[in-house]
Amino acid sequence: MTVDVPISEQQFASAFKYAAIGLAVLAPDSRLKGVNRALCDMLGYTRRQLLEFPPYALVHADECHAELGLRNQLLTGTCGAYECERRLLHHNGSHIWVHLTWVLVRDASAAPLHFFVQLQDISRRKLAEAALRESEERFRLSNRALREQAELLDQARDAIVVHELDRTIRYWNRGAERMFGFSREQAQGRTFDSLMGPGSTLGPEAAAELLKEGEWFGELECVDVKGRMLTVERRCTLRRDGDGRITSVLAINTDVTERRRAEKEIVLLNNLHEQRIRKRTAELEESNEDLRDFAYSLAHDLRAPLASIDGFSAQLERVLAQLLDDKSRHYLRRVRSGVRLMSDLTDALLALADLSNTQLLHQEVDLSAVARAVAERLRERHPEREVSLIIGETARAQGDIRLLTNVMENLLGNAWKFTSKRPDARIVFGAEARPDGSYVYHVKDNGAGFDPAYGYKLFGPFQRLHTFDEFEGTGIGLAMVRKIVSRHGGRVWAESVQGEGACFYFTLNESSPTRIPRESAIQPGLNGTAEPAGRARL
Image (cartoon, rainbow, N blue to C red; front, side, top):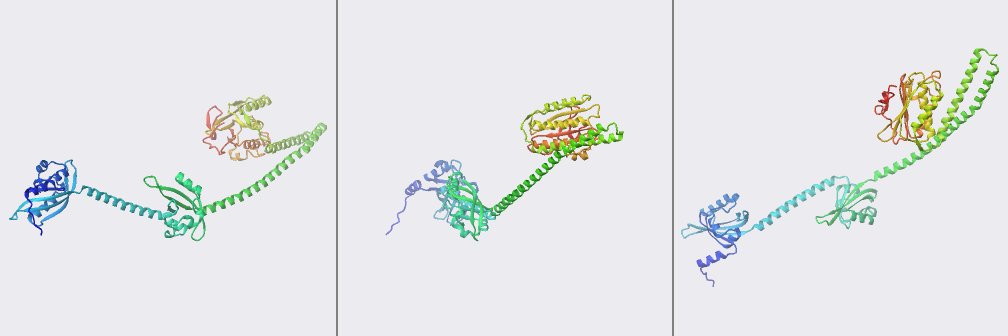
């Protein structure tokens, strides 16, 4: 039999004071009338401080209106009790979350006496709930990002695969399905070698490099679902977690089968072309050798009959000198002159043919010193001429001094010859440095010059832009210059204004033989100033 024992006021006061949860008694106007120790500890205030607070002072400003409405419902009898969660002001200025249970106590006449409130600190639970919501949001965003990445990866043309360190495939994009023909369901859970043959997986050395360096790149041979052999470029990269532990391997595969097939075809075609080129080159060399031999033999064999003609014509001139009239003697002199010219031409032809077979000597050559020696010989042969001959100092060149002397003799000799009709003859030799460290040499004169429209003929054998009556010569000298300069890895060209002189340029040992723009080839002019090569007025 249960007997209800009434609780005395003293017992209630003791239970209120030492209760483990926060307890408070509020007047009907919401002023605090009593608080227990647990509530003081919860909020960090003393009992006196709490009792001095005005109504609603501890409730968060955003929740005051809602709290006022609920207490009015208790006062009006709309409800007998309610529970809610509120933020209350802590002594340190922060707010803590509490769970409130409100009850209105009335007297015998049902008039409101006071509110009785129970308070439980739920701040930790709220923090956990917030952390859970944040984690769920991150998880949702992460899943969405993964879905978007997966969709993007599926659009890639390359085969993108993720597999474990034990080579078990975990991810297989649409590109891999298109490239290899295996569906995602067929590939996931299997290994490369079990799916596409032993050549499709990394060997021991490649796997060791991947683990050491964190990545590997190379070619592998894979067999697709139809049994076709594919050559694949694979780039493998290790994936790690936040602690640096290896989680998986990302493998990006590119089909290079057609590229490698095309490269093999190109190599094959190049080999065929090289064979044809070698064959054609050999044929051309043989043909050129035959032509050189023929020209040499022809020139050599012509010397004997020419010598005979010259000798017998000289005898005729001597024996019949008193018997011949002036016209006959003129004809005989013309014969001898033609023979001498023919002899000079054959000698020049032999010299030109010899250039192709001459072995080059590589040595330092002072072209300025060579030019001075050539100039001295010209002055000795023609002491009657007054020529202003200026030879500048130039850097030493690399080449064969015999052949380069021939170049200077021909160029300076031409300048000497074509200035013979000018009383103020002037010849300049010098060089201009280029940005790459090489030099452009030049020989300038203020002589007869030539018509630029026919300049392309200038360096051909036996090509003349002036008649023999105007200026004598065989027409082979500039052809020899071009041949010698070419054998020294250089170029030669000329610029002129007819009647105002000419300028011959040449280079030696060029690394990249490209034509110098006329506007950029600046050479010293005959008046000692620098003028553009294309505008020199000699």
